[in-house]
Amino acid sequence: MKFILILTVLITGNQLFAQCNGSEPQINLGNDTVLCTGETLNLLVQPIYDFYSWSTGSSNNSITVNSSGVYSVNASIIGANVILNGDFEGGNTAALNNFSTAYIPGTGGSWGILSNPGTYAISTSPNNVHTNFSNCPDHTSGTGNMLIANGSSTAGTSVWCQTVNVFPNIDYIFSCWAMNVISDPNISNLQFFVNGVQIGGIFSTTPIGCEWLEFNDVWNSGANTTAQLCIVNQNISGGGNDFALDDIFFAPVCLISDTIVVSYDNTIIDAGPDLVFCENIPENCVATSNGSVSNYLWNDGTQGNILAPISSGTYSVTGTSANGCVISDFVDITVKQVDWAIDQIFTGPTDCGASTGYVSVATNGVFEPGFPAIYTWSGPGSGSSNFINASVWDNLSSGWYYIDIVSNGCHEVDSAQVVPLNSPIAGIIATPLFGYTPLTVDFSNTSQNATSYLWDFGNGITLPIGNQNSQSQIYTTGVYEIMLVAYNGNCSDTAYTTINVLDPPIILPVSLITSNVFTPNSDGSNDVFTFQLENIVQLEISILNRWGAVVFTSTDINFSWNGKVNGNLALEGVYFYTYKAVGAQNEQFEGQGFLHLEY
Image 1 (cartoon, rainbow, N blue to C red):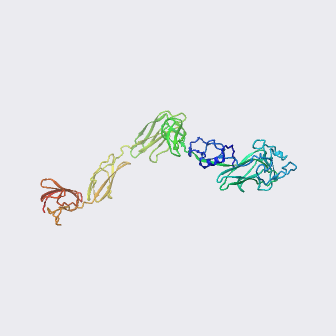
Image 2 (cartoon, rainbow, N blue to C red):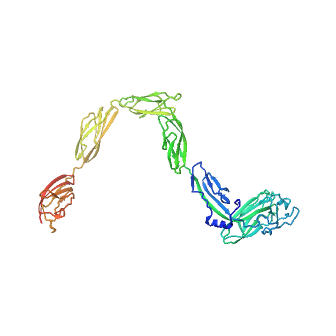
Image 3 (spheres, rainbow, N blue to C red):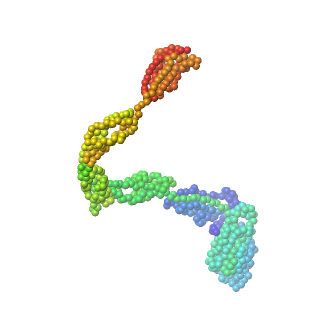
């Protein structure tokens, strides 16, 4: 059941109908709106309507929105009341007040004229008609009449009815004020009926006496021109069920409404996790978002979503969402100061194939008190370690060694190579590297610091040898990888080279054959000048007259000259030609000749 306040109306019913035909003032809550976090929106309707009903339950002409949702308002302009004597000031009977009722006038009894259920009276106070009823003022003026009833124990009993004239297809509001006349939990259950049809649900008074409440519902007249209005009691209890009615109202109503969708921008910005890092190994803060964000700006002036902090502190980042909302987040940065560094790494070589080398590291600066340096070395071979807490590591074989020094969680890393003394260096020179089968290849051994060698010629032949003498091998068609291993004690080095041997080329005959006389007279015989080619893949030809002027050129190997120059038949006589040609095996050659043109 909706509760509305009926205000004084100064317009007539006919004026109201004209407004409801489209000229009534409209409501505009504005376009659907997206708000930023923390923002509110004031929705305001002009204070020109008789009542307001918002989807939030408010009956004011404005509300303040602070959450997402669909908000709607119904406002009404109400016409003149068509009920006669709805305030019961016409007299002390139903007839005098122009209504009918299924209740009977009070018949008297031990507690007054309303001692019996199903009776009514019109009076200025319930206590006047029943000694157990409360002394309550009327709703209209506080001193006027009201209808007081000892409720009937028969459900569906009409308490008040009146027939009025109505306009077709108009909304009407039907309302009344009701109260309990005695503080009793057994309250009355009332309903509105129009033309015998219930409108709205049951409405009830409070269990506390003398509390006036308004109840109303809207009815559309449809095709009706009259309306029998009734207020019906549905309570069947004989005890309690005592009530009063006042200010019954029935008037045309013009309903105007509007709706707006309000949502909140849920875009957030995340400055990233709090960071703790050492100043010698800086880290970046990367701001991210769950939506589209632009204009990232950090409080130190850095633009963009990436910050490279250099000092400890709390950093904030702001950005602008796609809806124009400014959003922000914070991150705490702790930068550890590093007052020391690796100054130099020293190495000592190892004998070839032995483990007689060493590495050593020196630092500069001062380690933070309470956080001494911890040295972690690592390197190749089975002698490698993951934790050598010393600045020197010896008895090492050749290879790369790595040092990681840590103090108070801050690291410095570096590396150094232990090299072998007199390490062998393998080298090969092969001549030629490619050619046609059978191919003889000579190999020169250019190795250094080696005492013995192992040749692998790639053709299944290997040769261990104790000198640097040159070698020679004959290869057939194929690709061969040659390897030379040079040894010095337990040390070795390897060199490689590749030989590519091809099948011998196939010699193809190449020829250009032509006749030196042609007759372009269109008799179907010897009408064009051309070449008969064999194994020719490219051709350039030029034809010149006896004065050396070029009259025809072509790069088409299937060319033919029809004896015309610029569309006209050439003069009879001797002509010269030159050509350049490329054979199928990339042979290149050129030549010249002469020809007779006759008709």
